[in-house]
Length: 318
Picture 1: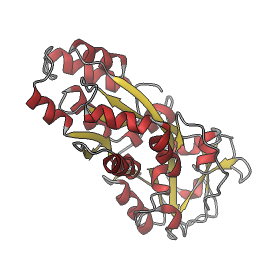
Picture 2: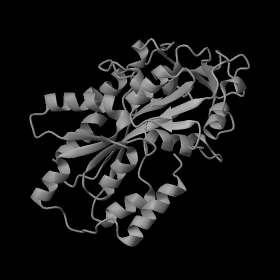
Picture 3: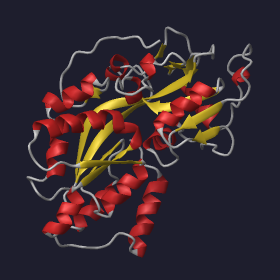
Picture 4: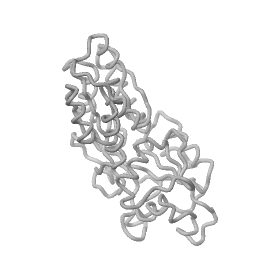
C-alpha cells in the first residue's frame, strides 16, 4: 500500500527534534507491565477486535490486556513512543518507522491478519445505490457536489460525505489508495463525525449523505448499528468500470473481498514490538494469527482471513 508523504514528513520531523524519547535499554519490569497493560486499535476495527479479545481472555488463564480504541494516527504514535507494545491498524509501518524502532532495540513484527473493505452507505430513502470508483473520487475532490450530477432525476441536493475521524485509517486509506493524484476537499461536503456509530447515525438522519465505514460494521451482530439489520440504511454497490450497472457493481461482502471484485479492500495488521516471548501483547497478536480460533473469528465476522483457508459464500447485501 502506498505511504503518504505526510506520514514520512511527520516521522522525520519527530526524529529530528527528538519527539520520540531515545532509550536503547530494555524496559524494567515495572515499565514493561505498564507498556503491556493496553493495546491500541483504530476505532473502526473495534467490533472484531472485541470478539478476538473476548475469546482470548476466555481461553487464556493469565493476565489480560485492555483495548484503547482511538484513531490510527494516535495508535501509531503511542507505539513509536513505546507507550504500548501492540497496535491494530489498516497500514503497515513505514520503513522509517520500522528502522527507528529497531534503533531502540525493538523488533517490530507486522502481521497481516485479515482483509476488510470500506463500505459506502446511504439512507434507505435515497434511490441511488450504485457508485463508480471515479465518481467517488470526484465527490471526495469536490468535483461532484450534488446528487443531480450523478442522477439527473435526483432531488436530494448536495452530497454530504461522513467519515469517522480525520485521523482514522478510513480517511487515510481514501487519500493513499483511492484519490491518486486528486486531493480530498474537506472544507465543504466532507464531514468527520468522530466514531463509526456516529457515521451510521448521521446517514440515518440525512437522506443526502454518504457514510464511509469499515465493512466490519456490516456484520457486528452485537451492536444496534449493525447495517445488515438496519432498515434505514443500505449499502452501495461500487464498480471499477466507467459506468456502474448492477451487473458490474459489488457490495463489500466476504465473497467480493476474497475474489477482489470489490474495489476498496484494505488489510488489517497487528504490529507488535513486545520484547518478551511470553508477553501478553505477543500472545494476543499470535492468537489473532492462528487459524483456530483467531482467523476463524475474522472469518465469522465477515472479513477474509489473511492466513486460513476458508470457503466463502456469495451473500448479497441489499
